[in-house]
Amino acid sequence: RRSKQLEGRKVLITSGPTQEPIDDVRFVSNRSSGKMGAALARAALLMGAEVTVVSGPARAALPLQANIVHVRTAQEMLEAGLAHCADANLIIGAAAVADYRPAVRHRGKIRRSAEPTTLELHPNPDIIAEIAKAAPDAITVGFAAEPSRSLDAARDKLARKGLYAIAANDVSRDGIGFDADQNSLRLITLDSPVVFDSGLMSKLGCALWLLDRVAK
Ligand code: PMT
Image (cartoon, rainbow, N blue to C red; front, side):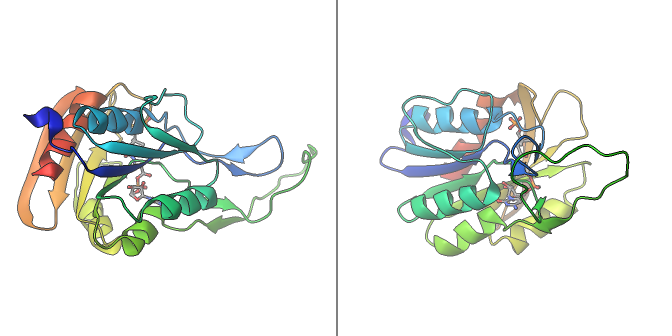
């Protein structure tokens, strides 16, 4: 029965890293592979949903049955997310958005010099928070990549970003989180004091577990 829990529902997923150009050959980014977002897309399709993925430049293959929107920067991810959120029932922020972008994008290639140099960074928009505001009727679920087991920062993000739920993964643990094949999620929601724990599983297993919990 679980296989069709999301029949007739539209699911929007942000996935992968963003890349923030320094010049034409260099960028600021992070270690996200896009595997978690791809697993969520696969899980949502298995559960019968119509799926759109707004994906940064990631190595993981996305399922062909999903509607895929390729972006590079956080600004582009925000615009694509806002353009596709209006009719979404469920929105999941699995992307590892670069929190800062270089203040200036240099054309061409910055020349090497013997002197130390500094890179000025400006904060990027909070994409999942902006989308949650623009789609108040959708259920919005964020991820929290935390460097410890504490859930304090995840609870803070849940409230600050205006989400229904947030899935915390402890990215200081080996073998889960960024670029790993497995994950271990702890889900907190607005309407329950219970912390739901997925245990250690493949990312597809975690994705099915998460969507099942949220669909309930
Ligand atoms: O891609 P993989 O290699 O499979 O790795 C999976 C993952 C570790 C990237 C994934 O499981 C995960 O934790 N994704 C969220 C990563 C993150 O950047 O978390 P955060 O705690 O910084 O952000 C909290 C939430 O706000 C997330 O839903 C994030 O998508 C969103 N966010 C953050 C900053 C920003 N400027 N815009 C956002 O939308």
